Image 1 (spheres, one colour):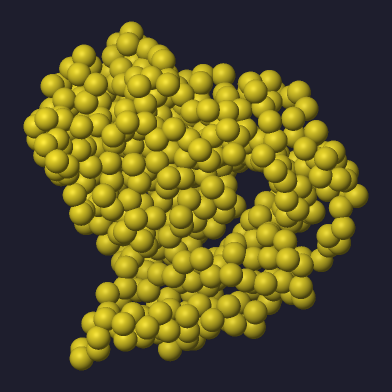
Image 2 (spheres, one colour; image 1 turned 180 degrees about the horizontal axis):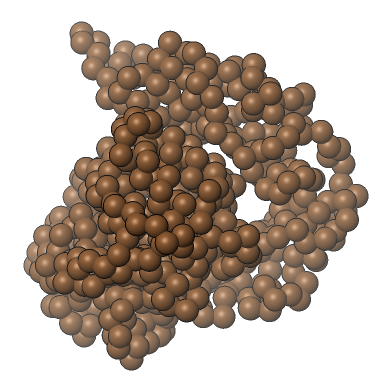
Length: 534
């Protein structure tokens, strides 16, 4: 799924081949990788009681993580009779020698269903565009295309049409809506907005004077990394928006104008200089790239060394920012309540959507959607702490920099419910709550795991975290907490992971990293219980 999500919308194996030429080394590594994936697929097929592999099924390897001890974790996508199985993805875990160590998945039963639709594609497309609480919020809606899939996101897998449509959301954010229509009955099963948003909000606006890598081109300089960080760059959208073609098809989008300067300095710290917001955005993407590399050994958002790019000054009075699978886009805010959304935690938040998209692929609806948003809040916050910028010291407030009037942020992780909308404790209704609010459960868990319960001051900001069961939790620190969440995300979570499964995933991650009898492991359990996830 190409996920496009907004703000409040893999470890790399290093192998030395002594005496081998570059071509031979690459060939050997490729062969080793192929062997691991082939072995994982064979393992998944030979353990049907666990993986629910059955006739007419197929697997495709989409990612591999190799631990220092040689343990492998291979992420597989599943097909059934040639159709993609939404929610059928899994991770196969094997020892260095290839011994089976289990799998992580959410598919609950072996697939056995007919794949001849009773409802035509045309009918499904009409259903996707029919007036509803979702479609009424989208203007200029048009269908991109449709495909038959097996929707295994619920308790009972069923044949469905996945209809993609585009348009414009009410707040000016492009829309790319995936609508799942039951191919037997024509009923709309669910919708998933692949460009999500939350109202909210780099010489820079929010981060002071920061170092940048720039590229010299002739007599000018470009706001572009020169040979580092995937050559990430930043453009000015000149307060225009994407075309309808882009919004619908996700192609032909405006690239904007590459920001340049006659000197190596970009921006003057004021909005009056259009390069100022660009410097913020470039700085934010740099820090996010460096965070993932330094903390987890991840080579860029995609894990491949490939870069992305930033677009600033999008739209007019646009109070938002979004990630669409390839790039970050930032609005300028309304200038009254919210300034430009180019703060550090925004960059970390949005680009972390890209990490999630290229690892667990958490579906952007229900509890998995809440976990998706929580993951971006968690890593956006950790980027803020990593950068250690005196102008924006680390805290657990989300978006406080561009909140011009209150400076309290749009959400806070220590006590999510304090905003009046977010959930701080799990309940059976969590799956029905907007993902930006159900994310509070994961945010609360992470805060308790890292910092513990009760009152404390962090970088001059007062925090006070209650527990849902009246317990007291002692935190294990940010370094351990973030490693546990990242391993859970990349090794154990799959597209439909819910909060109960996230508990299992993080416990497995803590056991891998620190041992089953460790303080870290027991604190993970205690922190989940403290937010009512058991």
